[in-house]
Length: 261
Image 1 (cartoon, rainbow, N blue to C red):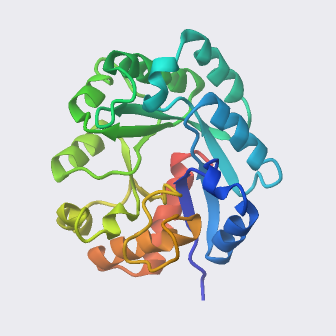
Image 2 (spheres, rainbow, N blue to C red):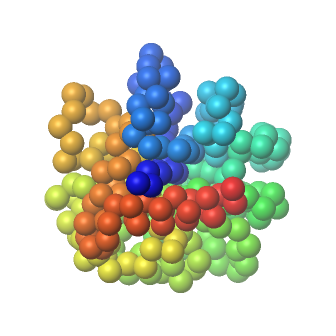
């Protein structure tokens, strides 16, 4: 019988909650058929830590390089050269996490837009995919792509929006990443019909560990881990009325295609 394979396209493994048991977390992921993890970087420093973490297992890990909108107030022109330099490393497979967050507003809107547009230009120049974050900023986010002939793949990670936003993203050529958010019977309720009927050719799954632990899991503490990615696949398989085997294969192949692996 063929084993299911999972690709966690977004895990914040540089988070301090993994400092003491990183190797155990990775072993558990592998035991649960996770074949690949993209470590999400949210700052220049994060990327450097990610590259250290993956040193001994470059078959299993890839990472991103960029500055999260939360830190856009500290972003400056010189960071662009740093991103370009770090992105020469063969394990850096995407630019980001980048985008707009007008929910928490940790950085001024104009700084977020400048930072975001800079990342789009770098991705285009380096021919690397974009790993995107959007929260309460859909219109401004889409406006950042005006007059841009986007030549690279781009994923809107941790999608929690509505059907209208979803299809606007697909029309733009974007890919979509789903997390354990969809396993929450309250917060994920508005997405049930969308998920049940959506096309799957540009869908990927992620844990966003250590955040967004699937609500259906009864585990000690609240930390999410890559091993729990199967719950996201199960939820989509159930709503799509497809087997877990079929769904996991589609998402794994989509992820390889997205990152040009």
